[in-house]
Length: 335
Ligand code: ACO
Image 1: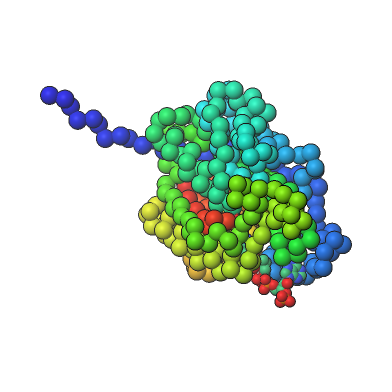
Image 2: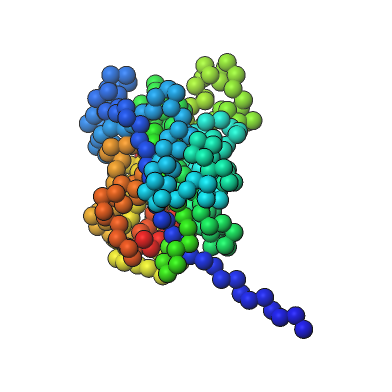
């Protein structure tokens, strides 16, 4: 008689290293005042952003992603050749194909790694982290590099004050492995509402609207957003997703040491804090210095918190994001 297969045991997956890279060029609100009709006061009070980083013309998403990855590799002493898989979350890839992950694989010498990009706009990093976790939990891969990297300055319409003040460039990276005895990623919540594709999008450049002279004249190859609608949706979707994820993890908001929210707007973060009834002291915020770097926001914030010595073993961390698609995502992990 054939024996029943033993129930598959999922291995835990932990973040064992972090890295980040920010371009050196700082663009302040005062700099923006010189190119569009805006003011430091408007930007600061509506968003909380003071300045953002802008990559050089020749500095690519893959360059920034590779720098962040190298930092995580150095920090952990992990050999790039031992990386099994690279997932890059980005909506500003170097090229439509090959993937930015392939460019990074070459740049960091991760010759054994499989590599692909994943796109869920600002929720991309958490979508990628959860995807990576599946490979580690299943025992398929030992070491997965997850990167969020963006050169948003390349898709911004610098004549549109509604959007150009909000975004910045940068990259963050984490390495995921099974760490015996650690609980790692405890729960996740991913979601999307494809009925809302029009309120935040980059209309041209895909097969729906190939680049033509007319498209360029109408500036349809740049990001477009209905800020107010996105704002309203962001607050409720982030809150709902965070609550679902906490429930799946069996935690309460008061158990959390840190909440790392998507860094789009200080007022959105305050609204989420109020609804979750968690003090702002528990929220990691760096949007004042970097603006919204889309899929790079969360790994940059996590890395900075780790480098400041503020992540202790056993800390429960909720990450929650929201972006174009519309998409949303949350994870709860134990550090
Ligand atoms: N400087 C000065 N005035 C401005 C600027 C600016 N940079 N931008 C807009 N205004 C004006 C508008 O023209 C409008 O003027 P009007 O009333 O005369 O028409 C006025 O300010 C108010 O504009 P609102 O849109 O009502 O401003 P609001 O308070 O909603 O703030 C903002 C706008 C900051 C964009 C907010 O709606 C927001 O943060 N939305 C969410 C954005 C977001 O989370 N995006 C995440 C997506 S990231 C991704 O997935 C790639």
